[in-house]
Image (tube, rainbow, N blue to C red; front, side):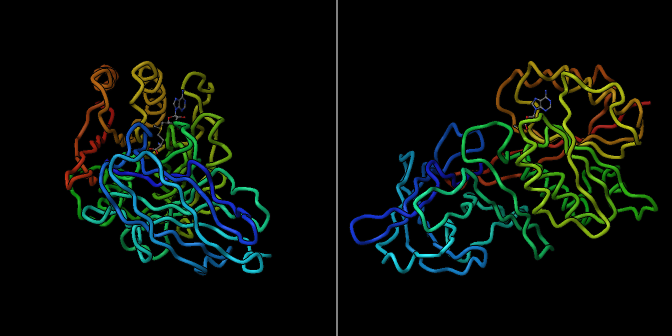
Length: 348
Ligand SMILES: C[S@@+](CC[C@H](N)C(=O)[O-])C[C@H]1O[C@@H](n2cnc3c(N)ncnc32)[C@H](O)[C@@H]1O
């Protein structure tokens, strides 16, 4: 299980007598926010100028096993030092850490950087930016998440595993799913059409368009993600011949004309945690594949409870046949966590 640095209170300048401090409150928690890192780790807090991200000051912090939050207080600084400085606060394991997503490189703790905060004492917006590097790409994926506990506006572990697996498949280092390899490696005369269901922050679809030439990715989810996904689409650097866009799609109320063009690939990451919504999710997949019978469906999931198993029964009943692969993510105390990936196609 990967752990994510989150702001419980976003940073701000805090005047105290004749000095100014930078204060924030952080935790190191799971995607679900239900558990905290139970290992001691050293962290580095960097106050940096915005937008250049030039470091202005660094301080070491210690997260101790058993804690649920850590107060950050940097300073004192003289009021002149902070005047006119729009800043960000970056929290990472080491000052030079790059969070690289890969089979053996995905870090146990994912770093985060705040939204900008001004020289007045108002706190930064309740957001955190992840810079995630994918092997072979110099520019990081820049993904904003909300700092609160919303299910939709966060990155989930299965998304990280999906990106590792898509990268391996595009590079040809994983051959676990031959039909997916063929789809992603074949030179195309028309763009590959991908749709992501329950895209959340949009990280998986944005990563696909960043890694793959000549693809057109439609991210979909409930209206509540529109703001964060739009922000992430603005930050995205897709391949010059690829596109990413967003459209609301509630599985409960799919429009009659669900997709106007044939789809090649449907992405579904960590959307099977709620057994009650599985019938409508599978029904949307079924409808999409009726109009695009050749489409592949890549599902990534982390098993959380037994009730999720009904997903496999529903997919079987809808005549979907799977191939399975696994991606390991780091877990605390040098253990590993398995994320399952399934590539489905509609049986003839
Ligand atoms: C656990 S999050 C996963 C987000 C993202 N795919 C990831 O892996 O980071 C599940 C997503 O499914 C979406 N979802 C749940 N019910 C939905 C519905 N009825 N229609 C559309 N999306 C839904 C949620 O809004 C949420 O973004």
